[in-house]
Image (cartoon, helix red, strand yellow):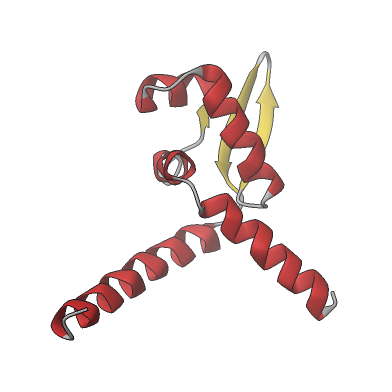
Length: 104
């Protein structure tokens, strides 16, 4: 993979995270896979909205899906994504604390 391809993948991955609804979907999938119907009920959004965000998350490499009968189950593509998000949350918290202490 070339540096350009890596950069493009990074941009696509981070764009996948850059939405409140998508972050809520990711958080809902941290513990177990779920269907669109389950996510709609849990997040209180329309099926069309959730489906669109799921498509973006799959294209970003964040989620994977599997079909079982008439249901499609979504889950995080890899545990490393969960670890990355936990690290990011901690890093952002620490950066925010430093900014507060510096009066920014």
